[in-house]
Every structure is written in C-alpha cells, then in structure tokens.
Length: 257
Image (cartoon, rainbow, N blue to C red):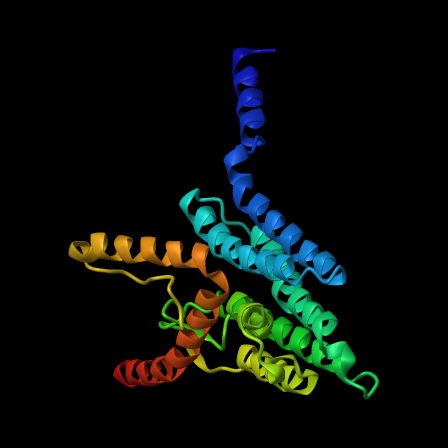
C-alpha cells in the first residue's frame, strides 16, 4: 500500500470515530428517562416523595442536556428526537400515572380518572410536537425569549404540586380526586395552549450583579434542601403569577417588531 493510500485510510478511520464527549448529552437524557420511569415504579409502591423527587430531578437534567450539547458542539437530530421522546415519558406519562395512582383512580365513575391521564399525556405530546416544529422556525424572532404554552418539565412539576403540598399541609380538598382531575386538565391545556411564557434560554444579567445573583442562588439551594416541599410550590406559584406578565411583555414586543 502506497503512503498516499495509507494516509487516506487513516483519514477515513479518524473520520468514522466519534469522540465520547459527543455522547454526554444523550447519556444525560437517558439518565433522566430512567429517573422518570423509576418514579412510576415508586408510585406503584406508594412512595410518593420518591416519585416526586425523581420527576423533579428529571426536569433538572432536561434543562442540562441541551445546554451541554450546545457547549460541546454535540447537537444532532438523533439527540433532539431522543430528548423529545424522553420528555414525553418523563413529563407527559409519569406525572399523570403518579397522580392516577395517588387519587384519580378513586373517582367512582369508571374510566373518568384514566381519562384525565389521557388528556394530560395527549396535551404534553402536542406541546412537544409544536416545540420541535417551532425550533426550526427561523422567522420567529421571539422563540428564544418565549415558549408557546407552559413547557413540558414545568408543566409536569405544576401537575404534581398537589402531592408536594400534601407532604407539608393536611388540606382535605387537595386530595379530592375531582379537584385533582380539573387541576390536571387545566395544566394540560396550559401546556398545549399558545399562551406565551417566559424562556430563560437567553436570560442575562449585568456583570456587576453576578455576585448578588450567586448569593441569592446559594440561599435558594439552602432553602430547597431544608424545606423542599414548601420551596417547590412557592416557585410554582411565582411561575403561574409570571404568566400574565409574560403575555403583556410578549404583545408589547410583537407590536415593536
């Protein structure tokens, strides 16, 4: 074999090699998927704190994989499709099934509780499909600032908030299956809707405030560790209250385009 052919063969072999770092985002996605599926398993065992914790961890991991992929220049169509499928399981199926096992299954009219599960899962699928399409829409100048509807991880966390509240407060109506059913439908429609909600993808802060933000984040982590079942509903309430603000800001920006 001539030196030129050897060099071409070596270049071909190098070109067929994939750096292991390129797989990190997909590994994180699969880890989140395992957490989401395991949350269902703990739901069958009625270990609700374990179920809720795993869904929240899956939501946090979902916020990491895309950013890591962009940082490592490891974005791919395969990774995007894997992420979308994992999101459907973690945030469209797992929370709905956990809520069904927690209280929706006790609705006396046969099939109604499961119907609420189906509505939530279908709306999550619609939301994810719309997100995948809008991600390719280069004409949408506001897609990095606003989501169409509540995004899937936040929708899942909002949906399981009644369970979270039950860990700290003994409120009878929170466990009422009809109340939970109506609440689940509202969260489902919020995901499938086109209501503009804030995205933090391009969120930035002045450099002079970086230390203050880090200090606040440290306090937040401490509060989350000490009283997680109070901090999470509080953040959820703040998010819900931010939706009217996001709508007003969105239409203001649209009018300026």
